Image: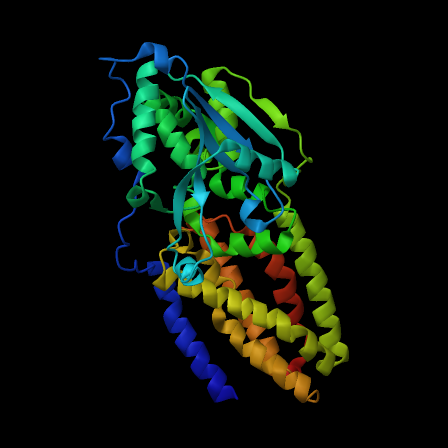
Length: 413
C-alpha cells in the first residue's frame, strides 16, 4: 500500500509542473474569424447608396435573460434586421449535440454556427421559457447598414457559418459587439475600452452561477489567472446583458421590454463565504466521523475524495492536452491536486477494514496543508506572478485540511 501510494505521488508530483507550462496543442482547423472577415467589408462607403431603401432598414439587439438550462444561465442575444423585404434574426449561438460534440467539448474545440431565422420563432421560445426579452434599436447610418447587410449575407453562407466558440472571447454576444464596432467605424470599441468596470471576467461570470454553489465552485477551480485582470466594458460585453446595456448607453437609446419574464437574481459575490461555510461543515462532519467510526468516515469520504481527485485530474488534463486556454497556468493544482488519489484509496480501505488507523489519510492532509500554506505564502511574496483569484478555494480547503490533518493521535501518523 505504501509503495503504491508513494509511486503514485511521485508520478503526480512530476506532472504538476507541466500543468504550469500549459503546453499548447496543435493548431485548430480554420473557422470563420469575426474581425478578419469584418475587415473585408466597407461600412463607410456612401457612393451609390439607395437611400430610400436603406432608410427602411432597421437593426435591433434582442436580448434574452438567463434561463434554467446550464447553457442558458448567461443569457442570449441575437441581431434582428428588418428590411422592406423581410425580417431576419441572426443567431450566433447555435450548436448541436451531434457525433463528436462531447469529444470536441472535452478538448476545447466547440464549433458554433450562425443561424438566420424568422424572429418570431426565437422570441416565442423565450416567452415560453418565461425569460425576460428586450429589444434595442441600433442607430447605424445608411452606409453602415449596407456594409452590415453585405457582411451578414456573407457570414450566413453555409461555408462561412461555423466558428470556434470561446466563452469570453468569441460567442453570440462578442460577434454582435464586433459588428457594432465596425458599423460605428471603431467608435464603440474606443468608448467601451475606456470604461473600467472595476470587475474581472471571473467576477462577471461567477455572478451568473452563484445560485448553484457546486457549479460556481467547480468552474472557478478550473479557470486560471487569465480571467483575473481588470476588465474594460469592451471585455465585459461577452455577456448579453452587459452588451445590451453598453449599446443602450452608447447610442443613447432605451431598450423596450417585449416580455417581462421572471426575475433573475444574480450573485452578490459571496462565493468565498459560501465556500468557507461548506468547507467548514464538511470538515466538522469528516473529523467527527474519523474520530468515532472509521467505517462511516470511509464510506462518507469516498465520494468526497473521488470528487477532489477527478476534479484536479480533469484540470491537469485540460491544462496539458486541450485548447481550454482558461485552464492554463492554474495555481489551484498546488492547493487541490490529483494527489487526492492517495486518501481516496485509504478511504476505501477504511470502509472495508474499519480497524485501520488511517495514518495515510492524516499524513496526506498534513501534506496538503503545507502545500496550501506554501501557495498562500507565494501569493503574498510574488503577487504579480501568483495573481489568480482563488481565495474561494482556500476558504473551502483550509477548514478541511486542518481538521483532518489533526484528526488522529500520535499513533495515527
